[in-house]
Length: 294
Image (tube, rainbow, N blue to C red):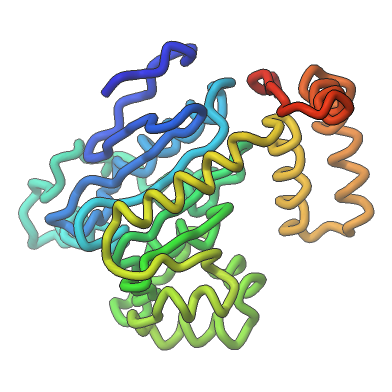
């Protein structure tokens, strides 16, 4: 993997994950456990959270994309590892190549959630490219992504209740807000796993559907979206995203706007990128953005 020279530090190591920087300002994170349908062992949650925190701290990076290899985006938690770690009659050796984290009862870091993403607030946007099966914790990550694109052959679902567990990584309150109570209840309490990408788009969870089953075709579309996003003023993107996130809080819209304006907006107001945006408009040219200092 060739790292951009503009990075201030190398990314932290994340087992079973491929990293790439295909276009300027964009990080692509690819889950790479295809034989396990990209299910996540316990130690991977903290490792991915550390990666997202590194991404937020890199001034040159403006957009991250999460996708998977093989026929699945992410089938959720590694239940074989969970069974091994929780069944006293099972073998004490983990089925996962990652080191055990059984010393802690925490399933995943609370501030990041499943895969470091399902409960992440963060600073910069994450786009999810759903290349296939998207279940359980994989679906919980999608529910907290900034933008979601999927192949038409991808399928979605929350089967936790059919296995005696609960989708407790942050998706439940978010799905009520995104889908409405009845649709969220249907998905969560019935546990079906055959929801289509088109249905998720109609319900407001997916932004765009790419026809077919070719993951490269999906990635081409998502990279186009990422390039457009990365071409906007990075400070304005960060602050606008914070304003959007405030709408998810139990906070009066007026109070949320005042809080964002008095906080992070003040940090960008009158800054280089704001001045450049106005000046480039007056001069009728394309703006040349500086990396965000927020």
